[in-house]
Amino acid sequence: MSPTDEIVAASQTLAAARAAVCSVVRGKESVVELALVSLVASGHVLLEDVPGVGKTTLASALASALGGQFRRIQFTADLLPGDITGVTVLSEGAFSFRRGPLFANVVLADEINRATPKTQSALLEAMSERRVTVDGHRHALPPFFVVIATQNPHDFHGTFPLPDSQLDRFLMRLSMGYPDRDSEREILRRGPNPVAAPAVLTPEAVASIAAAVSKVTVHEEVEDYLLDLVARTRTDARLVRGASTRGAAALYHAAQALALSRQRAYVIPEDVRELAIPVLSHRVQARSVGALPGAGARRAVEELLWELTPPV
Image (cartoon, rainbow, N blue to C red; front, top):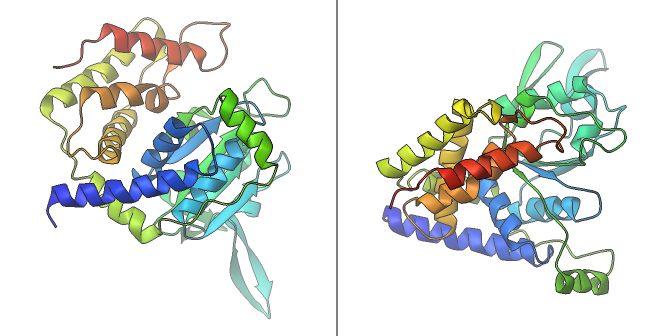
């Protein structure tokens, strides 16, 4: 199979997964596509919005479509690190490790910002290194491991802001938003218990798609455009802190995955523009004071995109 044929086949498989998720999550095709793009680029996804707009439904539908072993963790203020990583227990005179819910292919971290910083640090190790450390012993997580997290806005009661180092481990931060009128009517008629999305993919299939993503070409002109955008975030007066090299790499790989999703073997500047806000806005810090958390950063990145001329 040629590289182009491999990309087309991977794109068709990804389209089937997108259709499966959209059969459950109505009216959010763009968010579903970006979430799947993030996951096949081996990245974690953060869904941030007010309660009741379908964040958990989307996360569950993504997990169902991806297949593999799935675990859901409800984050609360009394959740301990051992509750998610696992614990060492004494049984019949010998110590053994009892695995926690992080040992799965897809982990839904529901209301992630309700957990304390101590528990967040345990999750950070899992997200960044694909392993956990318990009682001084390291335990590897499955080769295919992604976290789909939901969080409520920071001004909601009982939430702890995620540290910047953990936010940086999410490839994308997405917002659901309210559904359109027709989609909301369909949701009301469907009732409170939607059917689960069919399992279209497997961990092996996701690995195959990820391999195809790496073969998507990024021409030097598009690379320069991406690097110019990242460099501007580091020098722009509207931002206190710009995007890191990890952020630049995240935007690069996400653009490759988006191009594959749309059956292209190459990245175009519009891919970079479309992904800049979901990939970069949670990695930069705005200088403005008094705005809603994250709003200033999103606005700054959006204005940089308008000011920076893309290649033709």
